[in-house]
Amino acid sequence: MIDIGHFISNIPSFLEKEGSSLPWEITTNIKSIIEEMIPSLGGDFKIENGIAIHKSAILEHGITIKGPAIIMDKCHICANAYLREGVFLDSSVKIGPSSEIKSSMIFSGSAIAHLNYIGNSLIGRNVNFEGGSIAANHYNERVEKKIRVIFKDQVIDTGTEKFGALVGDGSKIGANGVLSPGTILEKGSIVKRLELIEQLKEP
Image (tube, rainbow, N blue to C red):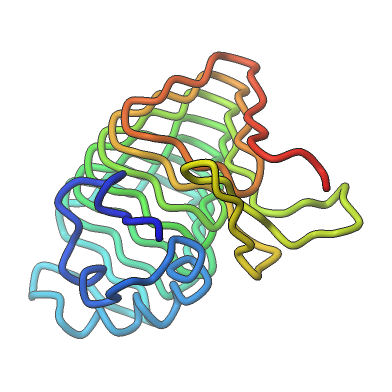
């Protein structure tokens, strides 16, 4: 059992009601989770076509958002960013220029720099991804594409071919670092620049 609260502090109530959902179950079902959240948002949001944007959020030019999506207060999304297939950005999240976020939740105070890709992931609070760093979500190069994770020396089969990472609060991912599919990082983890994190080798 992976307790998301062990990695991300002050879990929002919408995730608490997901009960024992595992990280990859949340990212797989993220569209319906976000769709259920949107009607409960207050009047400070502009909601259109399944996309809810807080009035205090800053969106620069050339951004593409494909719903459902929620952008909370004080977020800053820089030019030419691409948000698709279910994205939740918590308060004060910054998305850098030309970054792509897919089927992911990024929690408060986190910053994703320029030219990044975050796929099917849960990113904790006050996490920093430097430029060019990647949370990969699919084993393109493997014959067996089902993703397995390792947690407390136990190998867990996620049953899915699309899962990126669970990144704990306060972690730092260096420029051009790569998190292989199924990466689990404890709070305060450090990934060096140009480092590849591959916690499970090909079976």
